[in-house]
Image 1 (tube, one colour):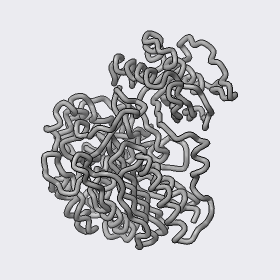
Image 2 (tube, one colour):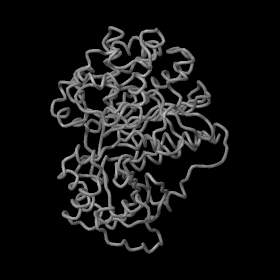
Image 3 (tube, rainbow, N blue to C red):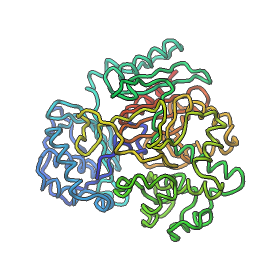
Image 4 (tube, helix red, strand yellow):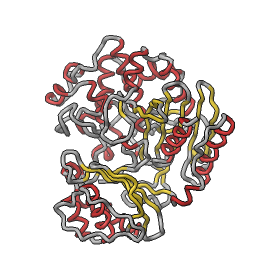
Length: 508
């Protein structure tokens, strides 16, 4: 299993997730020594898992790590990912870090734990997250790690807690964005609008490093999963036209779907809310044959015949496959190609002239190249960045991978809030959080949109991330602010800035 740069449930926290697992309860584990600073893992199931995970890495022993994986990783991860890949990840973490020292427990609940560590080699601070599997609470569903600045150094550069006028607030935003760019933690564009007026809009870094082409305020960036918002709007338009219902089964709206059993259970509502039980299409066959996948139905052979991961409506699990299926539903019900539909019914009405799912073999002006440190050989992101071409699909899909610009995303946000794309009732329905993701915190998921509370205000939108891809749209639904951060570095470069800016503005 490869460390994945985006786990959307945690997009607001900026944690880099990897679907893994671990259960220490059946694995003999030596008692951990209490760190000199007094921090120690809690004596809870998730705390024991986290402690044993770190100890397995610190041992550097391949056999011990394999034993840990067999007894601690969830059945779903062991089924999806070869053992040698899982062991390789821990081996590489061990080699890069020289082992981890626990510094502090950030927070802990029965289902997950977040903690701060420091590498024994290089004194690098790394924030980790571990989460247990709901179906197997004594095993890990996933872990995440993120290199962070020294907490003591960060105190001197903290965001202001004061309420400011616009000029001072703009300077505060600029101070933090410029620092991130100066330290090479961010490359891209930041746009902040107050009401309908843009109060901050600047570009940083390089769109193409070989030729020294800089990012511009209207550079096209890969959206990652942000395309899901457009797919949701397309479905809502068809609902508004009376052509389908959110309660319709897949069997009714797409009777030719290959898996009849799945089609009879899954509803449009389930697909939009990631409660369908469908999984993903990022499998070896996808990366080995990227040229085959240009339209939604092209993806069906990858996942359509898979058994559901759970009964529809019983759990939440982020599913790219669900939005591929929704793209096929748009085509079936509208009679139009998916990409033609969103262009004619969403992008054009909103004035989004620089947005589209441009194929890799097209010549597209002013398009940013993604630069990544993610990969099985660089789990801590310490190596030089590389262009991300090898991890990209040939063309974007209803689930993600299209391109847009910061000005276009602002136009989309304004069109959505002004009800130019949908009725007020449907605009509210799709953007407001209706499903608990089970991740804790104030965020919920709607229909292709996330909804989180910041300072008592509803902030809606979606993020997107993958190797060399990270962008985020945050719409203050009361109309006060819109925050757009787009970038061509790995997550959480853009998401961290967007979250911090939104937190700061929520205090204004």
